[in-house]
Each structure stands twice: as C-alpha cells, then as structure tokens.
Length: 226
Ligand SMILES: Nc1nc2c(ncn2[C@@H]2O[C@H](COP(=O)(O)OP(=O)(O)OP(=O)(O)O)[C@@H](O)[C@H]2O)c(=O)[nH]1
Ligand SMILES: [Mg+2]
Image 1: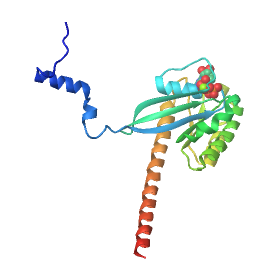
Image 2: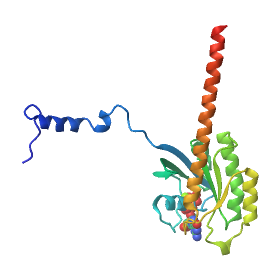
Image 3: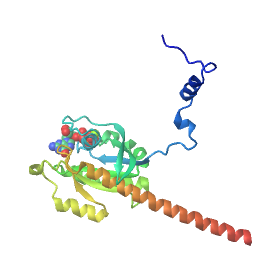
Image 4: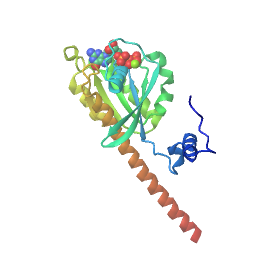
C-alpha cells in the first residue's frame, strides 16, 4: 500500500513533499524565457493551397482533399538560424464568403504569405487586392511579405508566366518564391524566409524605439534645465 508522506516524521519526506508543492520552475527567481513568437498569416484566393502549405510545413503531409477553411491557427517551435523561436500560423479563408472578417485577422499579422496558384490567373490577379487590403490594414509599406506561386508541380498546367510573377514581386519590392505543397518544394523556405524578414523588422523597430526613447529623454532633460 502507498503511504502518504508525513513531513513531520521524516525529513526526507519533507523535501519530497515540498518539491511536489513548488515546482523547480516556480522556485527559481527568473521565469524561463519564452521563445520569440513570429505571427504569420496565410492569404490568397480559395483553393490555391494555403492550408496544404501550412499542413505540409506543420506535419509533413499533403492533403489531397479540398475542404475550404474558415480560419485555423497553428503553433510550432522551430530553430531559426540557431535560435529557438515559435511560429504562429493563421490560415485564413480564401472563399469570398469570409472576406468581411479578413481585416480583423490581418491586423494581428507580423508577416504575410500571399499565395496564388500558377495554374489559375484569377488567383494571381486577386493577390493585388490582398496586398492592398494588407497595406491598408497594417498601414505599413514595408510589412514582411512574400509572394508565393504554389502548385509548381503542375508545370504542364501553368497559366501564369514566370516573368509576370517576377515583375509583380519586383514592382512591390517583395521576394517571389514558387512552391509545391505536394512535393514539399520550397515549403520550409517560404516560412523561414518570412520569419527572417519578421525578425529583422522587429530588430529595426526596437532600435528605432530605443532611439526615440533616448531622444525623448534628452528633450526631457533640456526642459528641466530651463
Ligand atoms: N498538385 C497540387 N495540388 C495542390 C497543391 N497545393 C494544394 N493543392 C490542392 O488544391 C486543393 C486546395 O488546397 P487548399 O490548401 O485546401 O486550398 P486553400 O487555399 O486552403 O483554400 P481555402 O481554404 O478555401 O482558402 C486541394 O485539393 C489540395 O490538395 C500543390 O502544391 N500541388
Ligand atoms: Mg484552406
């Protein structure tokens, strides 16, 4: 039969009992630092492969069936250039029925994978609208953003010329990458490249903020002398 430790009679049990109540993490003064979180949003028309890319990245599997998404979110720890970080992926709905709720989702994003299918010119045209909506909501021309031409395995069904895709990306001054959620080609690349852009953006922002704080502090001191 198992005995309940009695701290009053056995000093060894006292230690065990205390250890049960207070976990080592709580006993230490500094809480363990959480890995940096990078928030990525998948955007693009219905059926272009946003969910397939996300699921391939998350679980290394390709889903053949098409089930339109409402909104799904995923989180995973990854190692980005030697640093452990967390990626948070919000896979949004491409179907027009859900267009009205996009603003709210876009607001929370730190970086965007704007996906179209190289087999479907309408989905390429739609990237223009997605980009405009993102810039409007984020109010930031330099928001981390990749243009992604998916379904590169279907080269014989290609209907958006490579040059046209590159031109648009060049015009927007964003990277252009072709992926296949089916073969996994460039899947890791687009998520990792975007995280690098987000990381570099965050470090620029924090430098700018520190600069502002110093400036403000300087101004404050001047005022107090006057
Ligand atoms: N051959 C091929 N098929 C793909 C690829 N990516 C996605 N598909 C297929 O395209 C269909 C639509 O993919 P989804 O990932 O569900 O599309 P989605 O962009 O998430 O669509 P919504 O959720 O409606 O916005 C599915 O049948 C997928 O299997 C790809 O790279 N190659
Ligand atoms: Mg989907």
